[in-house]
Structures are given as C-alpha cells and as structure tokens.
Length: 277
Image (cartoon, rainbow, N blue to C red):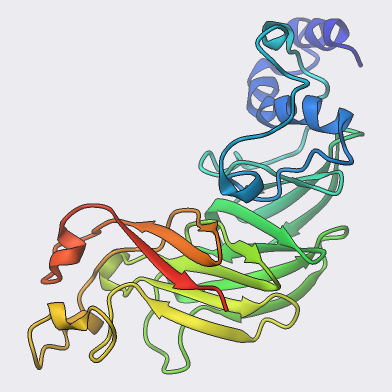
C-alpha cells in the first residue's frame, strides 16, 4: 500500500487516526532499513556501538521532508514503551509493549511473533546477539532476564537477577547489553534496593559476574564509607538503569534515587565502568 492510499484509508476512517499515529513510531526506521537490509542494522537501543548515530545515508537533509509511512502494523497493544528505541536485526524489528515483546517483519510490515512475559518488561527495551533476544523484567518480586529465539520468540532461558544470597534486588528497567557472548543488565535502586550490574553467558544464562554500584566493605571505593558501617549494603543508592555502551568495559550512568551517606552517590550523575570479562 503506497503512501497516498494509506493516508486515504486514515482519512476515510478505515484506519483509526490514533492507532495510525501510535503504530507509526516503528515505520520511519523501517523505510530506511528495509532498503539497505544487508548492512542496515540497529542492534542496540542506542544503535551501532551505542553511539546513537547511523552511518546510513538514504535519508538525508534533501529528502527528509518527503518521508511517509511505508506500512502500519496493527495489533501492537498495549502502548509500546516510549523509553525503548526499537532494535533492528536480521530483518526483524523488536519493540516492547509490557508485558509483551513483539517482533515485526520490516519487509512485510507484519507481526512475526509475540512473547508474553506475564510480568512488566523493562522500560528500556531489548538487546540482540547470538540469535537471541534479551529482555529484562521490571517487577522487583520477579526481577529476571529472559532470552528468546530471535526468529520465533521461543523462550530459551530465564534467570533471576537476585544474588544467590537471596538479597532483595530491584527490577530491571533499562535495556540489556550484549557483547562477546556476554549479556549484562542493570537493576534499579528504588525502594531501598542495592543497584547492581549482572552479567550472564548469553547461550546458557549462567552468571558470569556481578557488580554492586555501591561497593561492599573491602571493595574499591568502600573507604568512602565510615568504618564498621554496613549501610552500603542496606541503604538505597545509585541505579544501573540507563542503557550501557561498550568499549572493552561496560559503562552505565547512575543517579541517586534517595539520599544516602555515600557522598559519591549524592553528587549527581556518575559514570561507572566494569570489565566485561
């Protein structure tokens, strides 16, 4: 359906205008990406190398005013998360609409599959890698990371983000990060939880490492806390809730959720870096 026919159907009431606007959020990227499928991917919420920049040139200052809808996908409900940039890989576009994850065929403009997580999915979106789609669960009581088959949406594994000790852990609100066979995700520090970054083997879901944003006694930075003070492990602190980027290290921006005695967490946003392997 070309642009003129599509708009005519909207004006004629055959496609509700509200649904047309709501679902068109996935279309602009598809127009450019479908034409350059072999090289045009958006493999993370922040793009290639998480730079929020695309090297594609098909859309430029000369033709940007002529962009129109290539297709409209019906049935993506409820409203997709407005924090999550769609991720494109292998001809599929992935969006989250809690509690669902949708895969859209960008060439046909049709839903390829839908996965029901039965719990609120992370607001930040998904990550892809090794033929899998990774999505976090925001609900603190069920905080976890799920791996799905990229082509079918079939569940492969699901792991809890809580440590083996059973320590209460905040939900996953940001998008995961995939790199070199490792997928990592941050947890928030709302309601007194301790912010963490947890990494897993992408194929098996086995935990690879765990990083606490506020250091435990004896860890680097713990000397900023008063001696014999265990508040680092019980007081709310910064969260690992924003999208990461990768350059041999995993970086996350954190911010103080509630006041604490950790001066580093009270001075505004900070940058934390941890080795990915």
